[in-house]
Image (cartoon, rainbow, N blue to C red; front, top):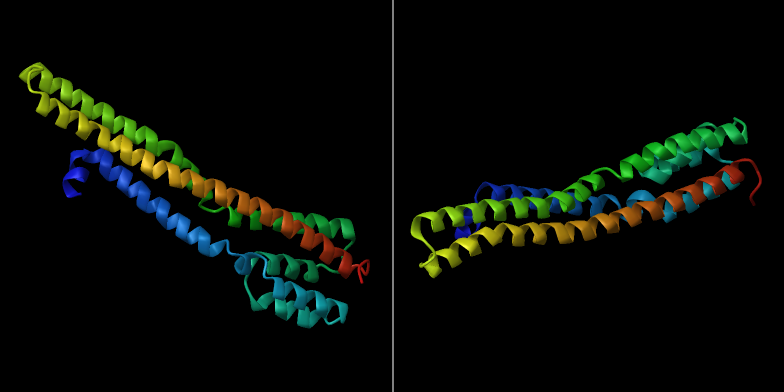
Length: 202
């Protein structure tokens, strides 16, 4: 394995670094984008129940109990419960945009890694092939074992580049879809909560 890595040269080390970064982001996003950390169903039910009981202070305390995206949005809605419906929607939209940016954090880096990893692998292969042709110019084409070893070495980085890019791209698409679904769910919960505050929901 050590020989495989060292054969790829500088490009291989860069690919390993990008793979480690990709894995770190994937694990972090899996933890940060779990349902209970974004839209905790039990908290929402409890907060809505407190509002129905006209116990705003209890609802505010419940919002602060867990520092999640949905709780922060509901807390803002409660704090601005006296404003007109249209103004409240504008306030929640602004807060919502901030929360979406927080949910999308680091996801774009996965897209970047998925895009550049194959190119880095190709770059490593091109550099390796240049070295192979330099060997040919000195040794000639008679030594097949030397040429085969050089070509194999050149292709190592392409293999690693693809190995990094494919799972990273899958993870990016997965997190992108997950965030988009959360955005829809948050919007629905927020609109329902606005109606509840304005007495338009039972």
